Image: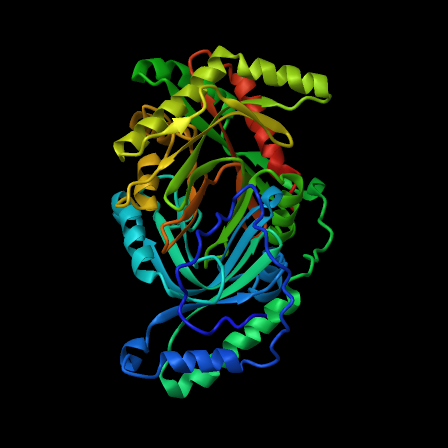
Length: 496
C-alpha cells in the first residue's frame, strides 16, 4: 500500500464515474503492505498541530486507503452487520461497484417536508462533504441519497419504512473501479489524547477489509420458491382496462401503472443472496440495495439511469417501449425490429425524450441526443433507449436537476401532475422507493442516480415485488399484463 497520509488531497485529474463503461487503467499495486499504522497516526497528528489545531478538532476527514482488486459485496457481507443500514450500487458489466455502511451523519426529510426534500438533501450533502485526504488518484467520498416516489413519504407502513428523502455520509465506503479498489473511512478528528485510539480503530478495520477484499461472496443454497405463498396486490389487467377511458377524460397522453405481488416464505428472504443472484443474471443493469434501520431492504436490477454527472457533463436515459427477447437470434431480431417500428411504442418513447429535453433546457442545459432510439437488449427484455447528454452550468447542482426530472413520463406519465393523481387513485398500495431516485453525490459535483424499477421491498419473511407498464391510447390490457409479468421475472429468478 502506498503512503496515503502525506497531505491534503491535491487537485487530482478528473475522477472516473462509478458507472463508466470502461474500467480505469491502473498500475499493479506493487508497493509493500505496511505492517503498522504509524504513517496514519503521524499524518493525523500533523492535522492537530500548529496554529490550526483548534479548528481541526471536530473536522470531518475522509482517508482513502488503497485495496487493489475488491468485491464490495463480499466486504459488505463480512464487515457490516446483517441487520444494519447499508447502501449498495453495482454495474457488473462495467466492473464498477460501491458498498457503504456505518453512519457519520444522516439527514431525514419527513413527509411534511416533501415538497422541499431535494433542496434539503442538497444542503445536507454540501455541508456534510468531508475533506478528502489521500495521495494519488482516488474517488471522492460520496453522500448516498434515496427518495420515495411521492413527496409525502412519511416512513410508515405504506412507504415501507422509508421517509420522503434520506441521505447519509457513511463511515466506510468500499469502491471498485475496474481492477482497483479503495476503502474510504470518514471520521471526525478528536482531541489529541484520543487520536491513538481512533488511528487503531481505522487501521484494524482496514486490515479486515484488505483481507476480505479479493474474496468471493459465500452464500448458502437458496430454498425453493415452491414453499412460498403468492398474492397479487392489485388486479393489473382490470386496472388498465378501467384507466384507458380515464386517459381520454383527463387529457393524458400516457399513464404508468405498476403491479405489485406479495410473497410470503416460511423463512426470511436473504437479501444478500438475492443481490448476488441479480448481478449474475442481469450484468447489464444497475444492481442496487438499500436498507433502513427498521429491517426493510429495497433491492433490484434497474436498466434505467436517471442522472449521471461527471466533470459537469450530464447524461440521462430516455427508456420507454418494451418487447421480449426472442428464443433464437432470428426471432430476437424480428421482435426488436417490430419494437423499433411500432407507432405506439415510439410515441410512448418520444414523450419521455421530449420531457427530458424540455426539463434540461429549463435549467439552461442544451440537450444533445441521437435522432432515433436504439435497442437496449437485456437478458429477458429489450427497450427503446435514447441517451441524452449536455454540459451543466457552473451554478447548477445535480440535486437541482434531479428535482426537475423526477418523476419522468417513463415511470409516471404525461402530463406529470395529472398522471400522479391517477396513480394514487388506481394503485391500492404505496410505491415507497419503487420508481424513485437512488444514488449518490460527491463534493466535486459528480453524481449517479438510477430509477428504482424492477425492484422488491423485503421485510423478513415478506417480499413485495414491483413492476410497471406505460399505458397510452391503444394499449391492450392483456399485453400490458404480459409486459409486467416479464419484468417481474428479473426478481422471481433471483429472490431467495
